[in-house]
Image 1: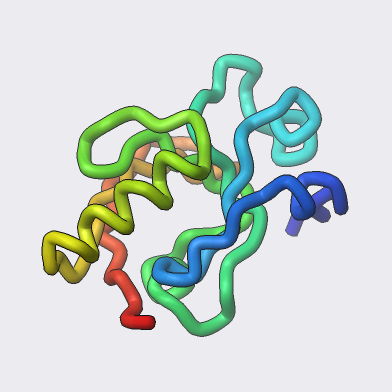
Image 2 (image 1 turned 120 degrees about the horizontal axis):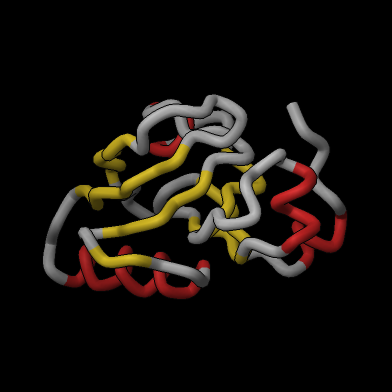
Length: 116
């Protein structure tokens, strides 16, 4: 597993409802996770051991490119979409994920929204 730089965790946003911590992609994070320069989206920098993200196989270094079929580039966009889904009474959100270090086709993941 790639080691995440301390400053990336400090600048990251934790989304408890998904059990994940996310950061905007930077050149340093692209290099750290061996992502292409053209990679766009939000990178996973931490996954809670017990939570929706871990249950669905989301891993550190994965890149979320869409939520609810809308492109994202900042962790706050994902947090906002999760809050909107909760307010609408939905129990999950749909993510499009490029799996870091496990090259291949992007995959859709339906993540359960944990109740607070």
